[in-house]
Length: 309
Image 1: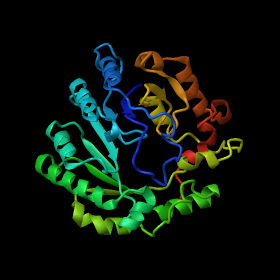
Image 2: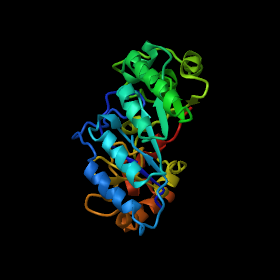
Image 3: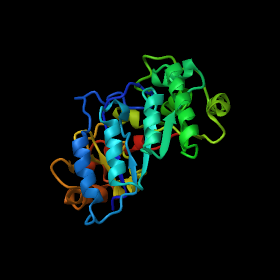
């Protein structure tokens, strides 16, 4: 089953989030091309394609707005799938008012999400190493355009305070977060973020308190440690969704930040060929059987894939 196509439009990102893997995007910098997206969409929208693709995620493992074909790719999705639900996660560092105006005018995205992990400039910078002032300028421009053009469009703010993240990693993995050494964590909390921005953003904006995950610290988890008590938390998504890397690889899931567990390449094969491939079936069977050592990286550190309190 393929119900969702999740595109990693780039492996680059201007942020350095405490909760994101430090080694993500350190290899060759790549952007997914509009030509390859066109090929994939042609197949997925063909009458003969046996599955109904309902949703698209355009911001897996990188800042989609760094891709020069960001808007053309959104237009391709809308052209091929006029009724599909398109979702984006953004830090809003690059999502300017002009970009928002184009997106709303052409109805290119149906759900916007952002991480806002601090209530002031110091706590926000401690988590993301981005200037809060520029981010808020873009958010305010976005909200004005949203109010004018489509006020019913969902906008969700996800909050992972840096203090909570550091405490959870220390408590559960017994290590220091890999990106902690070069920054000073400023106190902040979910309630402080909501109190600061609720009236500023509007009562219809949803705020969500996110439990920390350990995937950014995967390299600090011993792959030889017994982890049979842990199930794959993303198995339902892996069975029903396709995650596409900038080079066209179909990779396991969004927690595979280095895109190491590869089913095949969509520049060389079709969606259906890879969906029905023995390799995909074998990966899913191994995940369900918790055969972590057999699978190898990144699943042999499945402990890091789980939320932590």
